[in-house]
Structures are given as C-alpha cells and as structure tokens.
Image (cartoon, each protein chain N blue to C red):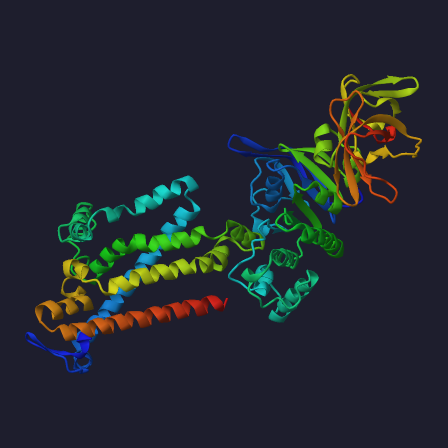
Length: 364
Length: 253
C-alpha cells in the first residue's frame, strides 16, 4: 500500500443533507491499481461517498483529492473517474456500440476507424463480441452490466466507480461476474472502487475494504484482517457470523488470562484484544468454523466444552449446528464440513465441542 | 359521401361526381385558405410546443416531487372556464384599447395602439397557443418523467456537459412526448373555426370557416364536405410525414 501512489485522498470529508449528517469525517487514501470496497448496510453513507468521488454530490467540508488535484467544484464530466451505475443507466435509444462509444465523442484526435476499433476492443474485453449493432433495450441484466463496464473502461479512467453493480443479478451470474470483474481489474490495472452491502462479495473481490456504519469508517483493512481481527463487535457481526460469550480478561505475569461463560478460562495474546477498555465484562467472540463438533471416537488437542444440539441446518456440503453449551442460555452456531463417516447429528443429542483459544477475539 | 354529390338549392343530386374537387382546384380562394390554415396551425404548433417544453421540463426536473401534482393542477386551470370565454378574454387583452395596448401606452412605450395583435393571424396564433398549451405540456411532461435520471448522470460521467447531455440524452428520450404534443395541437387547430371568427379578422379566417359557410350559408354541403375531406387528407399526410421524419432523425443517431 505505501509503495503505491494514493490516487484518491480523502481528508475529513463531511456531507450534510439539511439536518441529516450523511458523512461524518471520512479520511482515507486509496492506492493506484487497488480494488477497494466500501461495505456497509444501506444508509451508511457508502453510496454518498462514491457519488461524491464521482462529482454528483458536493461535499460539505473537508478535501477530496483525485490524482493529486483538489476536486472541489469540478463537475463529473471533468473528473478522471467513470461510474457503473446500479441501474446500469444504459441509454435505451442507442445501440450497444453507440452506448459504448458515447464518451468517445469528447476525445479529440481519434478518427472514426480508431473509435470503431476501440469499441470493438472494449466489447471484446467484456465478452460481448458482435453485439455492437444490437438495440440496448433488448439486453439481459448481465449484458447491460457488461455494456456499462465497457462504456466506462473505454475512456481509460484513473478510477472506476461501481455502485452495487451486481445486486440486480441472480446468484449464479453474480458469482460469475465477481470473478470476471476481478480478472478485468487485474488486466486493466485501473483502481476500482466498489460499493456493496454484500460482505461476501467484498471479501471475495477486494484488496482492501472500508466498513462503514452511520457515516463513519468503522474499520479499513484487508479482507483477512477484517474477518479474523474485527475491531468492534458491530464489524464482527456485519462480516460473517460470530458467536459471542460474556467474559473478561486479566493481565498477569504469565500473560493474559481470559475467561468466558460456557467456555472456561484460557490464555490469549494481546493482539486478540480489540479496543482499549478494561478487562471486566467484555464480549468474547469466535467464528462458527473455529468451533468443531467432536463425533464419536474423535479426539482433539483443543479445548473441549459440552452441550446439546438445539437445531441444525443441512446445506449439502456443510451442516450448521445450533449447540447450547452447558450453563449458557443462547445456542452457538457451528459449521461443519460433511465428510464420509461423519454422521449428521439429530436434535437433542449431547455432543462435545472443540475450540482453540487462538481463534478467540475479545472486544473490550 | 356528400363530397361526391351535387346540391341544387334544397335537393341533393346523388350522381357521383368529382366536380367539387375540381372547384377546389379551380378556385384560388380555397387553396389560399387551406394554405393559410396550414401555416397558422403550423405556427400555433411550433409556438405551443416551444413554450410547453420548458414548462414541462421545469415541472419535471426542478419542482419537488410532492409539488408536481399541484403544478399540473394549476396548468389545467384554464380548462375551468369555457373556451369561448377565454377567446373573448383574449379580445379584451389584445384589443385596440385592451389591456396590452393600454399598459404599453401608459408606460409610454408606444404612442398609438398596436393593431397587429388583434383581428389577424397573429391573434389566432396567440389565442390557440394559449388554449392548447396544457395539451402540449402534459405529454412532454410524461415523457420527461419517464427518463431515468441516472441516464443523465451517466452522460455527465462520460464527459458530456449539461447542454450536450440535454441534446444527446434528454431530448431524444423526450421526443415521443414532443411528437404527441405536436399532433395533439396541430390536428385540432386546423379544423378550428371559432377562434378565427372571433379574433382573426378577415386575414385570419381559416379553411374551417369556409367549410362552415358552405354548409350553413351557401347551402352547398357537397362542396363543404369536399373541403373537409381535403383538409383532413392534408392533416393526415402532414402528420404522417412528420412522424416519419422524426423516426428517421432518431434512428440516425
């Protein structure tokens, strides 16, 4: 990150809509060539931030630097950014080729044949060879998406902005487009900024993710750090599933001793503690895949707790168990890979649960 | 049917004949009237649509959504009074000692009343444009409302300024509404005879006045019918040509 130039530099950006404070002091840098995601629930300000970068919204205070230049007062048509809209915004009165060529009219020094060749290349890049003469309004959702991409990328922007581009597609197509977008981004080397509310999508695609809640950045980190070391309970709950226990910790001469209701005591390291609060009444978190059910005859070197299967959901490749540990009033979610020789437990059965202190996170 | 017959005082001769159409071709007055009607209707259409477009654009793009129905409601207020009363009001406004002339004279801008604003084709154009404005505004408004605003943002994002965005995106997408407005204004104005009679003066009379005269005064229903058929055909031809031209223009882009 530090070895690359910052293409976007936000300094204490605020945005007010009358009484509503949409962005509450956003400061961050986005590096050149990065695949960056803005992730958050609806209304968290992520789209406002994206639209501010594109120039469709004026920021109320702070500075927005794009490629080293202050963007205050610069209209969208003068910014080195292009956008893929959530609705794709394909011009219905034009053909696919005319849509893709729309922005080329402003580029001087290009002959007609240059432009035609660029359109063909752009369509090839998104896998729509031969679609140039088709009417845009007759395309499917996935094809519109590709046209919108080609239309933006043909202008070779410094930054491509994507506003929930995949949310309107069905699951299969969405997964296909995710890997295709990733491939495209590596191929063209342009900075992509993706706005999404789908945490899985953000994890799959991004180099870095900014999680936003209520107009603030809650955490800015790589997908792995975000998942394994969420800075707050809110982030942990938003990214994937996490089980929580009431607990606390004490720092002694031998290290940090953590206790959690239902699990017992264990030694942890300092980087597992998030926040700077005291060690009394903390939330202790663990991911479902870091817990495992010990089947008949299996042994483990990990710590063991006991409980009863409350409920389960069979997904084919995985089974999700709801297990209530002894002495706890709410069940834990545990995900188990289904393997040969591993039975699917029934409701009400007593079982042992193995856990590793290293996978705990403590929110103080 | 009437147009192929002959009328002799009170009796109808139902032998088919093209004499009525021959008379139209032989008599320059009728052709002159038709030409004048087309020119007046064309001017009314142009004036009305040119005025209606900005109003529709303003209501669609600049009026807050919750206020739009109020605006549309206000636009329809002229319909609350009879059309005849509205025409008479224009006589009051445009007349020799009417509102406009009195005001301009009192302001010292003119020394004697303007006479080119009443009892001539200009008055007909002004009156009809006012009468048909709501009919022209509504289809354009609907077409503008249907434009996805993100298309306009996309155009800005792709490097076009506001004016070119209007030219390349808004206008082509609003064209169906404009075409509808043009036809809605043009077709009925050709056949209007009340307005020319009341504010048109001798210079502002149109083909419909002649048709009325043929039917009711000259007792020559067949000739009147023939003129009506000719007027109708002209309107149809011009409308079709107009639709064809706009289609071609839109397709070429």
